[in-house]
Length: 100
Image: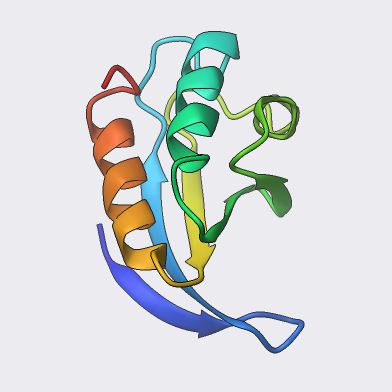
């Protein structure tokens, strides 16, 4: 999908990409755990936005609160030194249905 640089409501800049939840049961425990584990490997602040709800991508519980189902569009947001690499990796995970 596309990457854009945006200024958030608190004035901080972040990179953003939109992905589609392609897993059969949405972001349930297993894919949310995989996503959080991968996000924790980066220094960047990473969040997921779905239907005006924002969640910390490094927290499985936060991800689960989004209740993102199959077909939902999720915006990945990242800021920090390795933000672009983080978005690349997480976008790849979504493309592979969060299986690796």
